[in-house]
Image (cartoon, rainbow, N blue to C red; front, top):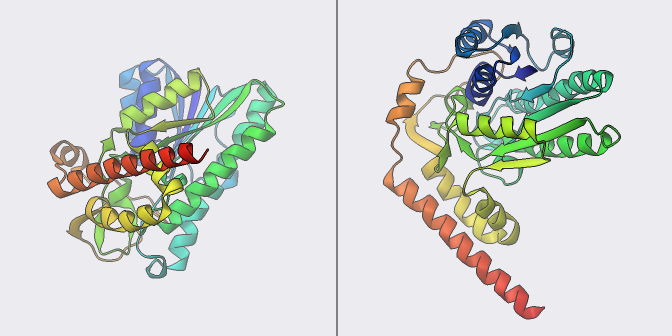
Length: 315
């Protein structure tokens, strides 16, 4: 089996690469940073990959994506993404535009190359790493939210347009909060570092969902125990959702660590913090954040049930 992973240098992409390596797959790893890719490649070889090739390329560079080593590809996993924190009016226009360019147009560039190969060979699975933020909205993340909503529309369109090819599948795996470096390497104009709000899943859990989806393709896979509750609140109770999401984001989605404005890895690669893995093991969410998140989920569920009961009574 040959698997291409765009965005393989860290986070979920790295976890997917290692998971496929343990199955003995042939891997083609793609990201902007060659040093980070080489490190992942060696870890994959140590884990049992039959062969690993690396390509340092930006998904915004269409020619570079087309130049990924040719040959049959069974699965293409795309997780490359960048992020920016801050109120919309505080995020520089070029940063906002680059986040959307990378996360949405970059995904379209990958689709052009992947689907062309799948058409030639008659089969293939293209899996996009989506996000809960492709179905709901949070403050201070407008560029990322915009791109993830667009990505969800793109995937739906691609699914419709490949119905004539039963061997080709386009899928979306959408997790909630995942403990990856993106929160620290993101551009930041919010004054405080971002962090994954609780409850937080591991990259390995999301990677396992992606591998299952590749084996048995599904249109959309959701990863996260509270995702459905949050989505229900967003759709059925907008006033309540809008009242809660701002305070919850400030409590759970932004750390207490102050940071000066910076562009993060939006334009150029930035290595994850040296102590990222150790910090992950040490991380303890504040009591107030966990209580607030749990309470909001419970309140949302209770109100959703009440709303459903009223609807049933009317019908």
